[in-house]
Image (cartoon, rainbow, N blue to C red; front, side, top):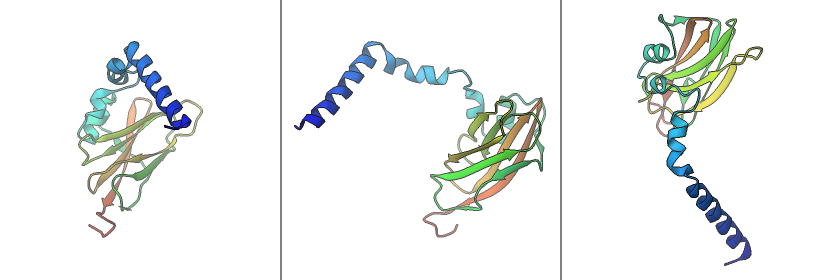
Length: 158
Protein backbone atom coordinates (compact mmCIF):
# COMPACT_ATOMS: atom_id res chain seq x y z
CA UNK A 1 0.00 0.00 0.00
CA UNK A 2 1.35 3.41 -0.91
CA UNK A 3 1.58 6.24 1.58
CA UNK A 4 -1.17 8.30 -0.10
CA UNK A 5 -3.58 5.38 -0.13
CA UNK A 6 -2.86 4.71 3.54
CA UNK A 7 -3.46 8.35 4.53
CA UNK A 8 -6.67 8.59 2.51
CA UNK A 9 -8.10 5.38 3.93
CA UNK A 10 -7.08 6.04 7.50
CA UNK A 11 -8.46 9.60 7.52
CA UNK A 12 -11.76 8.35 6.07
CA UNK A 13 -11.96 5.60 8.69
CA UNK A 14 -11.21 8.12 11.44
CA UNK A 15 -14.01 10.41 10.22
CA UNK A 16 -16.48 7.52 10.20
CA UNK A 17 -15.42 6.44 13.70
CA UNK A 18 -15.87 9.96 15.08
CA UNK A 19 -19.27 10.39 13.39
CA UNK A 20 -20.44 7.03 14.72
CA UNK A 21 -19.27 7.79 18.26
CA UNK A 22 -21.36 10.98 18.39
CA UNK A 23 -24.40 9.26 16.89
CA UNK A 24 -24.46 11.22 13.64
CA UNK A 25 -25.42 8.41 11.21
CA UNK A 26 -28.35 7.32 13.36
CA UNK A 27 -29.81 10.82 13.45
CA UNK A 28 -28.84 12.21 10.02
CA UNK A 29 -32.04 11.20 8.24
CA UNK A 30 -34.27 12.42 11.08
CA UNK A 31 -32.44 15.74 11.19
CA UNK A 32 -32.85 16.24 7.44
CA UNK A 33 -36.57 15.46 7.53
CA UNK A 34 -37.15 17.74 10.53
CA UNK A 35 -34.92 20.54 9.24
CA UNK A 36 -36.38 24.05 9.27
CA UNK A 37 -38.09 24.77 5.97
CA UNK A 38 -38.79 21.12 5.13
CA UNK A 39 -42.44 20.74 4.12
CA UNK A 40 -42.97 16.99 4.03
CA UNK A 41 -46.64 17.20 2.95
CA UNK A 42 -45.79 19.44 -0.01
CA UNK A 43 -43.03 17.12 -1.23
CA UNK A 44 -45.38 14.13 -0.96
CA UNK A 45 -48.07 15.86 -3.06
CA UNK A 46 -49.33 14.29 -6.27
CA UNK A 47 -50.61 17.37 -8.14
CA UNK A 48 -50.27 21.15 -8.52
CA UNK A 49 -53.38 21.71 -6.40
CA UNK A 50 -52.11 19.45 -3.59
CA UNK A 51 -48.67 21.07 -3.62
CA UNK A 52 -50.13 24.58 -3.50
CA UNK A 53 -52.45 23.64 -0.64
CA UNK A 54 -49.62 22.03 1.34
CA UNK A 55 -47.52 25.16 0.79
CA UNK A 56 -50.27 27.32 2.32
CA UNK A 57 -52.54 28.34 -0.56
CA UNK A 58 -56.11 29.00 0.55
CA UNK A 59 -57.43 29.23 -3.02
CA UNK A 60 -56.49 27.70 -6.35
CA UNK A 61 -53.38 29.16 -8.05
CA UNK A 62 -54.04 31.60 -10.90
CA UNK A 63 -52.22 31.46 -14.24
CA UNK A 64 -50.00 34.52 -14.76
CA UNK A 65 -48.16 35.97 -17.76
CA UNK A 66 -45.78 37.68 -15.33
CA UNK A 67 -44.32 34.29 -14.47
CA UNK A 68 -41.93 32.81 -17.06
CA UNK A 69 -41.06 29.12 -17.09
CA UNK A 70 -37.89 28.07 -18.89
CA UNK A 71 -37.96 24.40 -19.87
CA UNK A 72 -37.05 22.47 -23.00
CA UNK A 73 -39.81 21.30 -25.32
CA UNK A 74 -37.95 18.01 -25.70
CA UNK A 75 -35.68 16.51 -23.03
CA UNK A 76 -33.45 13.81 -24.46
CA UNK A 77 -32.45 12.59 -21.01
CA UNK A 78 -35.18 12.54 -18.37
CA UNK A 79 -32.56 12.02 -15.65
CA UNK A 80 -31.35 15.62 -16.00
CA UNK A 81 -33.83 18.22 -17.22
CA UNK A 82 -32.77 21.86 -16.74
CA UNK A 83 -35.65 24.15 -15.82
CA UNK A 84 -35.83 27.72 -14.57
CA UNK A 85 -38.27 30.47 -13.71
CA UNK A 86 -38.41 34.24 -13.54
CA UNK A 87 -41.19 35.96 -11.65
CA UNK A 88 -42.02 39.57 -12.43
CA UNK A 89 -44.82 39.47 -9.87
CA UNK A 90 -44.14 42.08 -7.18
CA UNK A 91 -43.43 40.62 -3.76
CA UNK A 92 -42.59 37.08 -4.88
CA UNK A 93 -41.37 35.18 -1.81
CA UNK A 94 -41.33 31.61 -3.06
CA UNK A 95 -40.90 29.71 -6.33
CA UNK A 96 -41.55 25.99 -6.72
CA UNK A 97 -41.49 23.49 -9.59
CA UNK A 98 -44.14 20.80 -9.99
CA UNK A 99 -43.77 17.90 -12.44
CA UNK A 100 -47.27 16.56 -13.00
CA UNK A 101 -46.51 12.89 -13.73
CA UNK A 102 -43.67 12.34 -11.27
CA UNK A 103 -44.43 10.13 -8.23
CA UNK A 104 -43.84 13.17 -6.00
CA UNK A 105 -45.08 16.12 -8.01
CA UNK A 106 -43.21 18.87 -6.13
CA UNK A 107 -39.66 18.72 -7.48
CA UNK A 108 -38.08 21.80 -5.89
CA UNK A 109 -38.96 24.83 -3.79
CA UNK A 110 -37.00 28.04 -3.29
CA UNK A 111 -37.49 30.87 -0.80
CA UNK A 112 -36.85 34.27 -2.38
CA UNK A 113 -35.29 36.83 -0.08
CA UNK A 114 -36.59 40.42 -0.14
CA UNK A 115 -34.59 42.65 -2.47
CA UNK A 116 -33.41 39.81 -4.72
CA UNK A 117 -34.50 38.82 -8.21
CA UNK A 118 -37.05 36.01 -8.26
CA UNK A 119 -35.01 34.05 -10.80
CA UNK A 120 -34.06 30.41 -10.16
CA UNK A 121 -32.80 27.38 -12.09
CA UNK A 122 -32.39 23.75 -11.17
CA UNK A 123 -32.18 20.25 -12.63
CA UNK A 124 -35.09 17.86 -12.15
CA UNK A 125 -35.65 14.24 -12.99
CA UNK A 126 -38.63 13.33 -15.16
CA UNK A 127 -39.78 9.75 -15.58
CA UNK A 128 -41.95 10.53 -18.61
CA UNK A 129 -43.37 13.34 -20.73
CA UNK A 130 -45.37 15.66 -18.53
CA UNK A 131 -46.61 19.16 -17.85
CA UNK A 132 -44.12 21.13 -15.77
CA UNK A 133 -45.47 23.96 -13.62
CA UNK A 134 -43.75 26.84 -11.90
CA UNK A 135 -45.64 28.00 -8.83
CA UNK A 136 -44.93 31.43 -7.31
CA UNK A 137 -46.15 32.88 -4.03
CA UNK A 138 -46.62 36.63 -3.73
CA UNK A 139 -48.41 37.89 -0.65
CA UNK A 140 -51.20 35.43 0.12
CA UNK A 141 -51.75 34.46 -3.53
CA UNK A 142 -50.24 31.73 -5.69
CA UNK A 143 -49.62 32.00 -9.43
CA UNK A 144 -48.50 29.45 -12.00
CA UNK A 145 -47.21 28.97 -15.52
CA UNK A 146 -47.10 25.65 -17.36
CA UNK A 147 -45.21 24.03 -20.22
CA UNK A 148 -45.31 20.52 -21.62
CA UNK A 149 -41.92 18.77 -21.70
CA UNK A 150 -41.56 15.65 -23.84
CA UNK A 151 -39.04 13.12 -22.57
CA UNK A 152 -37.50 10.90 -25.23
CA UNK A 153 -35.80 7.57 -24.77
CA UNK A 154 -32.33 7.64 -26.27
CA UNK A 155 -33.09 10.86 -28.11
CA UNK A 156 -35.28 9.09 -30.69
CA UNK A 157 -38.54 10.97 -30.08
CA UNK A 158 -41.47 9.58 -28.25
